[in-house]
Length: 541
Image 1 (cartoon, rainbow, N blue to C red):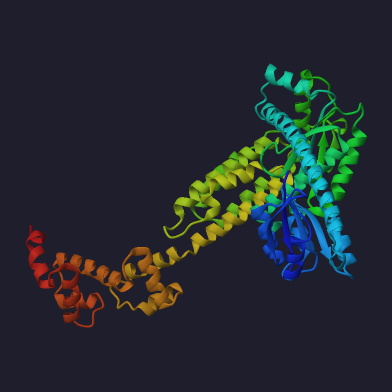
Image 2 (spheres, rainbow, N blue to C red; image 1 turned 135 degrees about the vertical axis):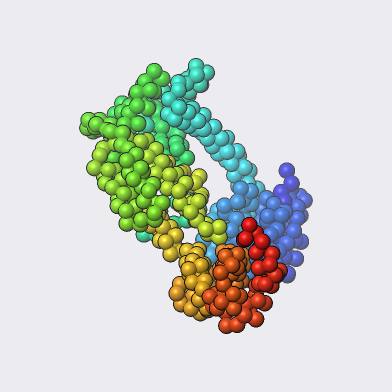
């Protein structure tokens, strides 16, 4: 094998000296490139993918230590030989901690020393390659096994179907049904100081870190396991352990203690754990799943931190309903009664607090509550107004489906109430309502001289803002609407044939008949007298 070498040093004389110090071909090596600083080195490592890098430990832009750190998480990590000067031994020791294979003093750089270091580097490269292949193979086997177990158990738990003989045989071959149990790890993100401002991306990152911690500790404590997110909600993990000793309760307790300590240091997410009894044989998998469901209901109602099935008390659960509350809420929403709506949602929260109930029923009722309110509020929104909370049904319904405890349900109901109150208040005092208020003022006062400033004062807006708002809502200027309304009323009065033109002009708030005639013709295409002649025969028929 020919080993590809990258030389990195900020001194050209050193690069030139190394190039001609030994017979590279004789040492099965080929210099594929050079770099003058750390940034160039990183780019060269990524593009040229050298097997060995001979690198100065102290350079501008990025030091040799920085390069080691930067490349330490790469899949194709090259082997490093570091070049140092006197007084840089601390840096050299740090380089060795980052798996540099050797370091050489520039002042004592000789062919024999370089060839010796190259031999070590080539040997290290071969060792790493072999170890990497073994690690990849082992990881693939473990991941593949875990995925098979997780996929089948997910289907089994969620659909309550039975495993096919094919999968039972496959899992039995891996001793999956030897002394097994379910461990459910539930995460409470609300205990975090920044939980209120936690974005979906940040929550997902926390969950990923938490899953990594769970898997690492499970590998240290349990002989065999599979970890999976059963409901896909990134709020809990189901741990299926098998090949356990006869009494694994001590192991489970030890695992939970280590998990809490590690999580406290890394994610600070509050964790709870429930665990079924141990079972042996595929014929008992349904019983294990039944215990898992009972533990989930118990956690939902009481939210205890640590519960084994053997500690579970008898628990009577009811199917709660919000039907009466929803029926009373509908008319309250239609009349925009904020206080009554708040009281009704608060009553739903009290039902959740006071009754031990099945989680699936409250998820169903909360979904019904949300969709009903959304179906009423959304059509009431003005055309220019949107509300993501009530229009983004898919996201909110998914949020409801992830509620894992009574406290979480109560917190959701509280948030829901705030959203309803906020939307109703906007509807009660919305910009659309203010424009409508101005419109009604004109209709009721059509016989008066209507000034924009007077109407703006009446609705509590500036004249300019009222004009802009009115045009946005009704697609015409406010002055145009005033004149249009007055001309419609003028036509009505002319058809009645009771008044002279100057009287109608006066009745509609015009200073003189000339201006009235001008406005009338603009809106009807006729003068008042022409319009009178046109409609008078019809009026007398």
